Image 1 (cartoon, rainbow, N blue to C red):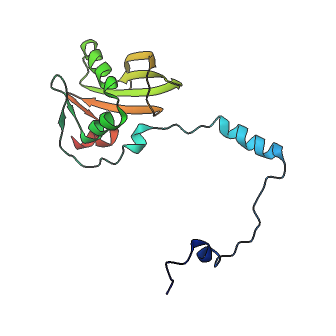
Image 2 (image 1 turned 135 degrees about the horizontal axis):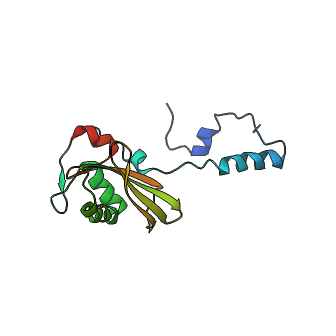
Image 3 (image 1 turned 60 degrees about the vertical axis):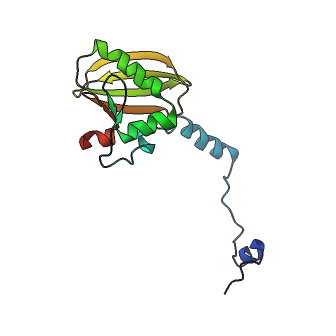
Length: 157
């Protein structure tokens, strides 16, 4: 049985390494790999992080009779993005579609475009050059009647 009071270096001495590590043959190989990855940056999507909501839960009251699902409520709380839903509510005066898909997408650092589409994909509204301090590169929100939900929650309500 192992004595847990012995130092960690003694534990790691039981493992052997070959001592050989792969290094690029030339700096140009490393540079070309870096350059090819530069144009394929992975977008940081809020929907990927908040896709864990897979069953219906309590709805949270919002403004003007609107409700938030648990996923949207957590998003608003933890990402401090109530400003986004205020903008969406402000746009409701100009829109008459019950089902809307709102997409927030980063265009340059701290600048976003907010686009609203209906279920058929027709653009209903767009706000460009929206300055915001939002961590994620993109976010999709579904508005069904008076309910805001994440795409993973859409069929639950």
